[in-house]
Amino acid sequence: MKFIKPRIEVIEQEPGLNGMFKQIELAGRTCYKSEANITNDSAEKFVNRMIASKHTAMLEHGTLYLDITLGSVADDPEYMWKSSIIQIFKKNPYSRVNRYRNLHRIDSNTMISIYHYAITTNYRVFIEQIPWDELGPMRETDLGELGLDKDYVLSFMCEPTKHHDRRITIKMFTDRGVSAEANRHRADSPAEQSTRYCNYSKDKFGNEIAIALNADIDEDDAKQEYTALEASYGTDNNTVFKGLCQEIIDDKNDLWSVVTTWLFGNMSAEFSYMNLLKMGWTPQQARRVLPLDLHTELVHTAYEDDWQHFIDLRSIGTTGKPHPDMKLIGDMINEKINNK
Image (cartoon, rainbow, N blue to C red; front, side):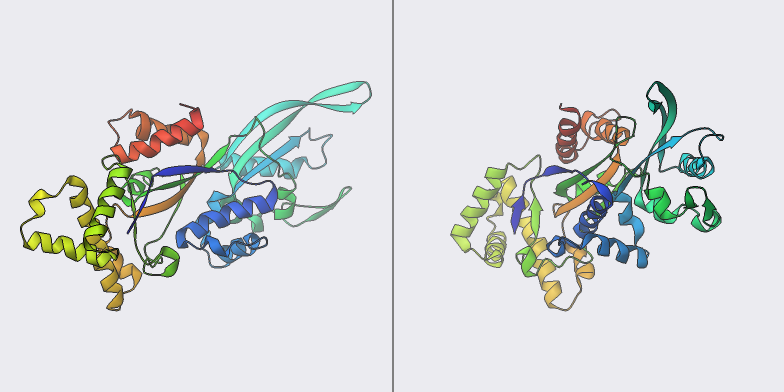
């Protein structure tokens, strides 16, 4: 059994279409703990597999920023198509559209103000929620062949500007109890390490479960106590667990500290989990005995104002005092986003 200190990471989406694909792949591979399979050219292949298998939830972690310049019907030959795109995203509940003006030079002496539409959406919306087959065929125009296909919409892709509603991706390293609370934020797009598919008896997990430290157990106290137990009973997890079981038989557990009692509870879960796997249960069956203290990794992507709502509830406590372990994570997010 090992200990993990709670923490967070802000994951910045890299530029361009491939940067969006990388963001999706990172979130998706968190579920299966398969980040070791990420290569320089694996992102697009991963995304295509997700689409082919209709496992599109992970696509929500890829943020798509568009900027569309819209002139008038008379002077903009693409007006019809651009207007259609804007209206589609305006009506979509998961997208944000902001209109602003910008000056454009039309000749050496003249500047005119033209409307821009800064659109923020996610790749799942782009793939699943745009009725491509209902938008009409490509048509020949003076500019060549135009129409509402995916490539045309992606031609307006840009990096986020001050006019876009920004989305932020945060990876949390915490426990299953905290993740259950975090995942209640339904406006967020979540991805979490799966106990159905992660087999903690395998080498990539060190053949042990990981326990998240918490607001009640000091990191040094936990490690010192566990080291002392290993010195008494041996460095194998089972021998420590058996030693503590013998102390219960000998009625010595009355002398245990809070830390020792906490350790014993998690050791018992680990002992049962590993033995159930040896008896032929799959990880999704054996997970029943895993503790809420089990370390987990989860990725949330949300708009900035949704993160502020998260902070209000989980750090500041506007609707009631947050759980201490949830507040640990909420405070870290508050500090990262608001520098508080």
